[in-house]
Length: 257
Image (cartoon, rainbow, N blue to C red; front, side):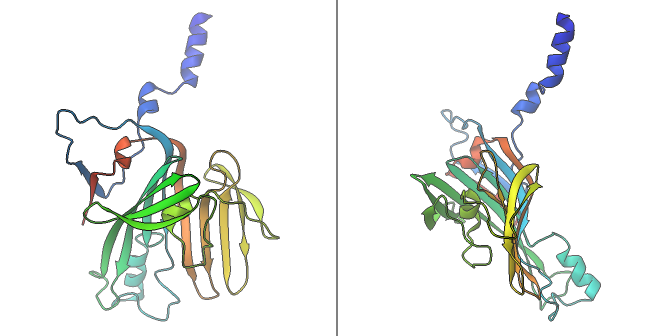
């Protein structure tokens, strides 16, 4: 009996190695710390929090009135289809701080499609204190540039032009209301989605239950010609083991290009 109980318990508990495996770091960055080789350096402890990946940005093809790059329709489509949306991002957060890594595809319309693509990399950080979110851009020399400070329960409308990604992902806002609001499931989470239809439209989905209640996990907006805003996760672990080096302010993160 004891052997059978031990085997049953072993099936319920994941292996220790899996429990300790941290969430992957963003793949297009290397990182270094100036004090890492010092004898008294101690790596920061792992933290529990959110590890997520997704895409954002409008439609690279636009309304089709202008060429994306110099080439055939097939060449243009092949270029913009390299990613679902022009910006790919990695988001890591605890209740008190967050870091957002992004790489954004740019296409030069006056260049041949074969050479028109380039990537831009950026990092942002946010800290929560006294009910306020303080966000910062990370400069190339690893210094922090002031972004904005806002209440932790405030997020921008996705069609506003003032949508700060890291501040809005850290915000915990109210659930959508109105006649178009409905309950759905997304990424294994209960969410409430709502918005507006018409020539100018928008849709937002917010986590409805649990410790992530109020977090935006989907947003889209546009008009009758094209989608002009998009934000969507394809992976979101709300209880990931985060490598502590993600939150070392003096650690230098260098992009691939």
